[in-house]
Image (tube, rainbow, N blue to C red; front, top):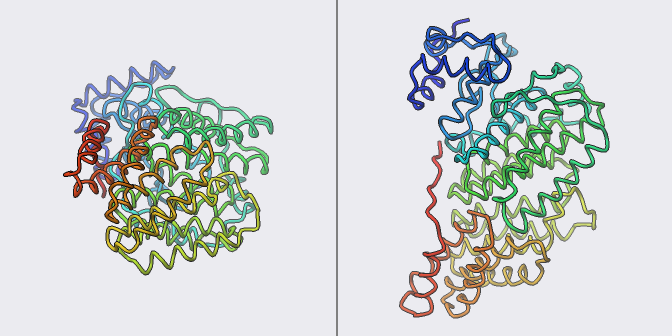
Length: 496
């Protein structure tokens, strides 16, 4: 069926530098390599994909996604190529289903998880960048998800009813990661428990050494889980699998953010929200959105972060633990602080402290256990340190909370302690206390060398900027020289 020109495909095709004939030959060659010798793509078919918007039959879209991913050095999915599925809207109008569409059905979520992670793994193996396209503004994610997150159909039973109508995929019909067809089978309780344990292991490693060294392993595990979810399992097992998928998606997103793959990280956060919905877990979805919001603040987009937090907090559910809600408040406060809103920052952090005090000792889900008293103080220190650049009276508060966080941090949270050092040093520089700042700045610099985390470099750059007013001091001049030698160049992502 002709739909008119496929602009997405045409734009990406132009970037490859291929001719239509070259692309046709590559499709046939790649198809034959994975046992699909029947493919007979030619120049005229490529032209129809571009000019008429024709959608080739499976597996050609997935073959094309793999080829474009390799050529462009970033994740390209079938959706990016304009090969979305069509769905019927309530008005009878045919529309395209995309990854930001809340009407996604469960099997589509599993397909996207498998496809995107497969392409991400392929880029890792080939040593390419692994970043997707431009970073989307927060409102572009928040607005489509608002009604969906705040709706009443989040119960696991509703997700189960949706899953019961899902098409059970046959072996070999899942997405095409890295040029091979992924085949998954049913999974048992022991395997699910092992997957849940692996999430805890990966999370602990990330907290200790940053996301760079284990990101590939997390993405690979998520790829496996996405494949497993293309099969129908008993409801309790399926719900646990979706929870694993949500946890791994958040972790893959956080690790991607940690190493500077910002658009890729954002995609994983959105997928985590969809997976959490299938698990019937509103708090998990809200926490995933809060990660996306933290990413936005880090990138200098606090307004977009507040858009995301509005959805995260309104959709977190009445049964959300006070500690979870306290964590969400700290992210909101950081966004307010980035905008220089002193009163809103102080009020929101006060609310966070009150909510945290209501904690009854319930450990909550595994992902919440990392938000302890040390992390509360660490986020308060970060928010007040950020606010101090607009309102210097916030600097002593930043110092107080940073000191509390440093004293409370337990082993295994080295990256968070590094951030505490940076918050303390930055607050001291703002408060005109360069001698005290220097000790913490040195500790931060030494710790940064042990991390595989671009975020630490970004925060170090922020502290470096604050040292500029004291560079006439010999010790500060030496510190600045050491920081310059340690810092790599890092481009900022495009935001649309």
